Amino acid sequence: MKALQVTVTDNSVAVDLSDGRAVSAPLVRYPRLLHGSPRERNNWRLIASGEGIHWPDLDEDLSVDSLIGGRPSCEGPRSLKRWLERRRYRPDQIKVLFIAEAPPANDSGRFFYFVPVEKGDTLFLEMMKVLYPKKAKFVERIGNRRPRFDAKEVRNRKAKFLEQFKQDGFYLIDAVDEPMPGNATTKMKEKLIGSSLPRLKDKLHALCDDRNVPVILIGAPVYNVCAADLRNRRVRVLNIDMINTPAQGGQKEFRCKLGKLLSSSQITTSDSG
Image (tube, rainbow, N blue to C red; front, side, top):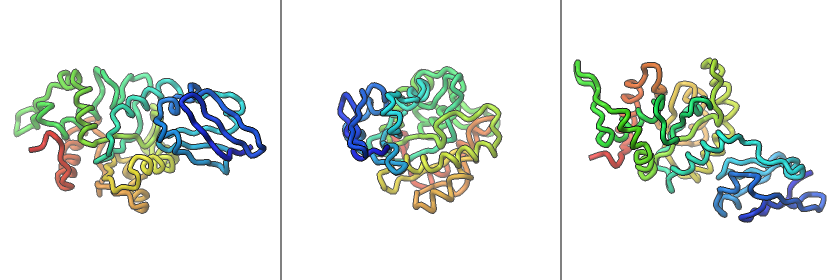
């Protein structure tokens, strides 16, 4: 069975089928559609020769079979929470798009856009040190002096930092939607990122709207898999070398590489000047 036409209202999604029937379902069964704007809901396309429907702005797929069978979205609550919190801080117009590897493990309670997070949010903390050193009261190590930084204070103000991140046009997404397996090797990560690359490119198209938005890739697996392919598709990847993930002692190298890249690309923040 194939879909021909899709209509989404505030309460339902209805699909005209190739056999002449029309089927519909309550929108509450599909949380991403429920939270979408009318413009986002109406931006759909048929996939798999009409056997499914894709909403690029919402990163949502719906198969005709599941609609006929009355099956709700199979997205788990943790994945939906990540999507909602990331969406909360999406800029109206993206100035720089960061692409990291994958969300942290589900049982960690951590995520770049979660508030609050009490520990282990290294990527967020290191990003704030680079983008907002004044607001974060961060002073890099000079000589034998240790870096000065109050992580607890920055965590307590995380919502404000994320709002500033948004206002400055910065946005961070992941190359892979779900957390990496706990025992994943670099080779396994690259394989998973490679299999997610078509969906990532679809996200980039929806987010950047064909504008020449600068993209910064974070982490060796992301850079190794995505850089050349995205450049071939005329995505403006800024880094010509990989930027280390700020973990396992790589925080200073992350700050150094990202800071130099932003400076050389003349990307400023509200903390600049």
